[in-house]
Amino acid sequence: MKDIEKRGQMTQIIHAGQHVDPQTGAVATPIYQTSTFAFRDADHGAACFAGEPGYKYTRLGNPTIEALEKNIAQLEHGCGGLGAASGMAAVNMVYLTFLGQGVHIVGTESLYGPSRTILETEYPRFGVESTFVDTSNPENLAGAMQDNTKMVYIETPANPNLKLTDIATCAEIAHAGGALLVVDNTFASPYLQNPLDLGADIVLHSLTKFINGHTDVVGGIVVAKDPDVYARLKKVHYNMGGTMDPHQAWLVLRGVKSLGLRMDRAQENSMKLAVFLEKHEKVDWVAYPGLESHPQHDLMKKQMRGPGAVFSFGVKGGFEAGKTVINNVEVPVLAVSLGG
Ligand code: PLP
Image 1 (cartoon, protein in one colour):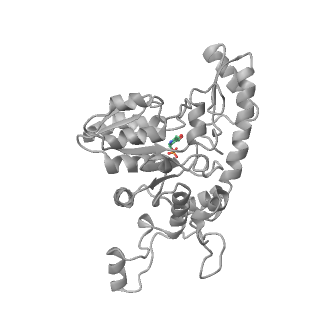
Image 2: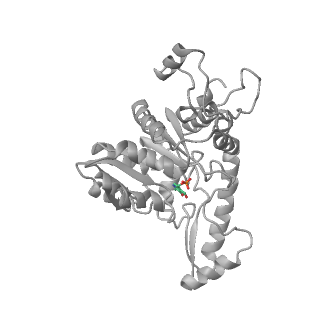
Image 3: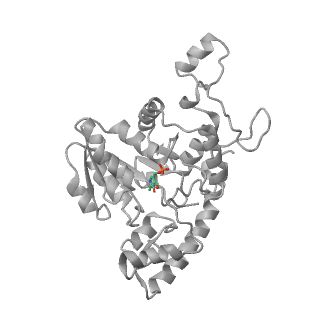
């Protein structure tokens, strides 16, 4: 589609990165389920490996995966995307590309568990030092910056406490200290929040959640704003090998088309539930950025187009009371993950 960036967001969600197949006229992006691509002759093969456009091997690029990468890169207003086997493969692609001996990273204290755990348990072997602070107060971030801080890694809304972090302020602090700002945008999705527009350098997603939206795929993606940052990520990603499978990419391409409609309905439902629970006599607290009682409700209105669809709440009576609720719900399935 011509001038896709000038179209409405719903139109971009459906069409970005995709085109009618020139050979067959297929409207849906075909699944190029192949590991390798034939060269016309030796010179063509050599030229492809020297950098000329052309597919070589699916770990190094595949048309179905590329369609998804272009779609999400467009929705996040970045220069390019890199599809990954899982959200954690996306997180580690970013860590491995920019962290190393003597480098310090500051992260949101309440990150998705493994994004923090791996920094604390594995990366010290490579000489990486990490500090975690409550980034919902940017002063904590400013206080944690060191001369060797090369990355600030935030999650907003954060999993699981739903705290928000001011992306634009963190970008200023990170850049003043010579660090990149990376934002995990999984909870908001590109439909509700675009961190690159607010100054972030890299945005990443667990596609497993709202973007795919059907609880049938695990996947991840990284989108960079700057072509040099994108090129560095790509080199590491292709050699590290946590890349996507074409069928996985195709399922996410199918899922993403309804992202806007699903998010609208899901956050409408969440708002009703959060208001109901906040008034309920047996509920202690509700954490939902859509409620005026949320400490960063105003920040939500400033940096997001809606509060999203995830909330958490605590019931009176502690752990046992919580178990009683969990064991008696009728509609929700007792399982991890979200966005399906
Ligand atoms: N980031 C956030 C905010 C998540 O909630 C998750 C998974 O729950 C991940 C990253 C990791 O994604 P995946 O499970 O697709 O590896």
